[in-house]
Length: 311
Ligand SMILES: Cc1cc2nc3c(=O)[nH]c(=O)nc-3n(C[C@H](O)[C@H](O)[C@H](O)COP(=O)(O)OP(=O)(O)OC[C@H]3O[C@@H](n4cnc5c(N)ncnc54)[C@H](O)[C@@H]3O)c2cc1C
Image (tube, rainbow, N blue to C red; front, side, top):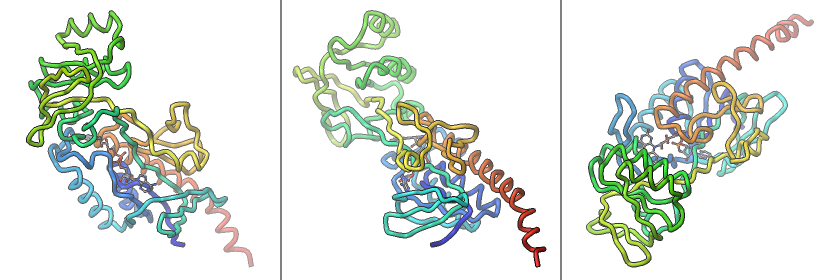
């Protein structure tokens, strides 16, 4: 079993940013990454200062090169199980049977986007089915856009998408909207179409229209939908980290969890984190982890000196 100062689980923006800071701090850091970042289906990444428009894979490839150039190790694969030992430290079991030991752990495993069950939605994800107007709204600005219902929060979400176009339709199931919702949507020139969306009409590899189950169809160039977000927090739960009743890990400063030695960064703990936010949280967690290790070394030093003086 190889031993390291820090194990980073997940090599997206959060994990690689942390690994860069830690390897530059001369820590022995290993990143284990399953290679499935959340924004992988998107052709371009937006809103990252100085990297706007870069393909997501390019950012991560650059990050991996930077980490390894400073001595960090990156392993492709998934951490299957993490257990706390009493040093304190952690043992990790990878899906290929490999085992690792580390003094501290940073979990940056991201989250899962769950879309409503509408035919064709998943196939068009990150093409013309979008979720984040800050990421992709500019690219479809001023076009005929739709918002697909995915629970009551969709109303507020439609008001936000309105920022990018004057031609916006909210598709909502009959009876879902209250009278105040209706008047506020109408006041902001957001059209309401009530009924069940059946499927997306795709022509020439592009969204053409949204089709309802009653036979109506509305021409739209792109639709936004707010996914339900589920954190990849199985490892955190397995370690005994405190989790709230929505399934999100409870964090202290810089991503510290309730279990000493375990930190988190990025979408696994913060559903609102954009790429630049996830990278920033990874960096902040890395500095906190290094400080914690320095504190542990200070605490251990007198005993080591005492031991070395004992005949
Ligand atoms: C379609 C789409 C487009 C987007 N576009 C933008 C955009 O333009 N701009 C922007 O700022 N944000 C965008 N986002 C949001 C962006 O994806 C997130 O902000 C970002 O990915 C969060 O980074 P992260 O490191 O927390 O998680 P991720 O990037 O999801 O990385 C998590 C990594 O952990 C790995 N992992 C999971 N479990 C394990 C395990 N057990 N063992 C090992 N590895 C594991 C995963 O495979 C993955 O590689 C977009 C999101 C989506 C869905």
